[in-house]
Image (cartoon, rainbow, N blue to C red):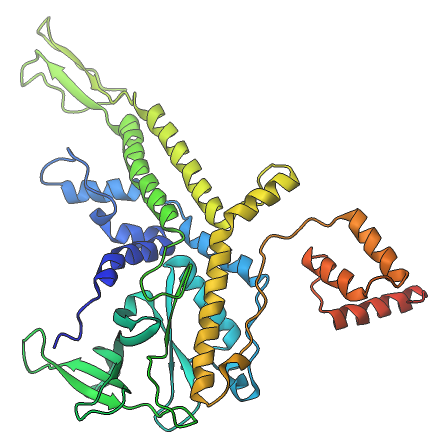
Length: 463
């Protein structure tokens, strides 16, 4: 039994996730990978290649674009964050939703961050063995190595984990013990209905066989509160566009690709600049061995007996520097365009309406991340509700979020206020409209209290 077998789609996606993680961490992580991201250029010289390559890499510049883009996307979504409404017996999740005590609102941020970076985050609903309340365990994309589904029902998930163990000979040392958590729906060997089972596998340290795994622990999670057995693995694969278990699109993959292109191009450009400034080599021709100078400098005179002797310097002309500089500018423009495509650039010098429409069309990725993330969280919370015997529909999905604010229409505002004063339209209409265009962020009751206070301070009367 090879419990560490990887799903073919996981194997295909893992290198891209790794590259995006490195790109988000920035220049230090990229340079740490050495030739994986910056190949050795030809002609660095025999015998001293490692030193020359180290200098070549040190002069290169990696543009810090991917990490800030992720933070920018999450920041935009945070401006309009809302969390699902929970039934009373699930409201404990608002304060502590994960094993590490993360409040639900912070869990939303974590989901957004992962979905914006690698386009995948996994929510696993579980219950304590002592019969406590359900909680949501979270796993990054790299930790779920295999899965199987039957239509919309997930029937197998394999999680890779590392359990910290204290060294029995030194209480200050710990080691990571790898283990594989397998949650699956099985039919008992003796027959009967399907059952939900969780097993933790570890490698047998006493054998060198690669597939020598044993069951370290086995759980049969309790049925739902109503006594019904669980016939699905309560796991949610949150993607950047949907909730399917297959790896989803990586929103910033294009930005990472172009940033690496810039990094490699800049390394060549920097080497050319270095050679132009420092790459001069003196030469002497036609002189005897004894006449060949041993030093150079402005105060040193070279004198030769032979009439045809000559000396000079071999210099790098740098004729390709202009072309390389233009290529770097082009790549910078492409990086900016790719970032704007995902994130949007509100600082561009365009007419307000043109900018609004363009930004609206280019935030589909941002909107899909927000929508998929919230749908995934709601599904996980409904799994928890079912486990507690509640109606899952009691978990209410927040209203869809629009990340582009409409421009306030002065004429419409005047008409709305006039209609409200004449009693033709309810004040809810103008409150909702002014909130939508971000003239305020208050709900209706708060707005009315604020408005009444403003009228009282101004000595006026509110109709």
